[in-house]
Length: 342
Image (cartoon, rainbow, N blue to C red; front, side):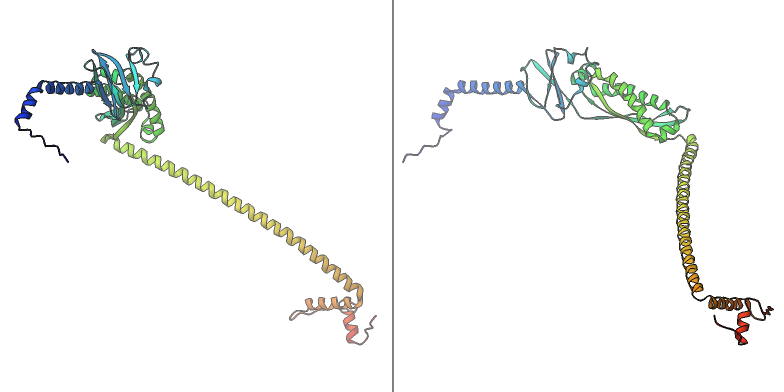
């Protein structure tokens, strides 16, 4: 069995072969480097949180945006005269690997993340000229990297532009509100800020920026307004407490009235039923009395006389009757032996 002999790189034979093919090897190495460079210059990668602008000889030819970016569709009217909606620029959606012409196309990448703008604290007047120290903030992102690159160029210019627009819009919204609405009525404040947000986006869309949200970041009372604001807050809370007490009293009165009405209805029904039962009982008693009276009228008359005497003769009472009086005659006749049963 034959085994291959290992190559001896230090042998004279190997060195001679290396010298013989050195030119070829150098050429192959150069070709590999050129191929690698060409491949590297022919492709570029757009990350998940990136957008890119492809320009050829200084003229923008293509932009790559995220799949969820519908900025151009929503703002077609505002961007109709801008370069990105012209036939000269191709809008491509989707991150990942993309191709370009090597050494001709230049790629510039921009972040697609949200940025936060926070203003300095300034004194703002409400509609009734009450002052507050207000700090505002906004969240924005680069929606069109081509317009952003052409009109703003970098983050510093963008933040300066936003500072000149966002803070005045929020201040104007607060100027139209009363102090009570500004401090307590968030719906009124948000409605005013929503109008300002639309104005800002109409202005910033041609610059490739879209603002997602604007809000009041922090509100601090000047010392001169603390007492009056605290008193107003106390008055507001007292008003709410009084309203709750009034509603509670009204509910209590309604419950008591309903209970009284129900009690009177129950009592009236009970009285009615008791009257009916009593009338029926008296009717039955009268029927029994009538039957008893008709069965033995003499005995009944005698028994009634005894009951009448029992009721009349109390302690230390003296009763003077004629011997023929109905209450006395039959008893007297019975006592003297003159009573005759009929």
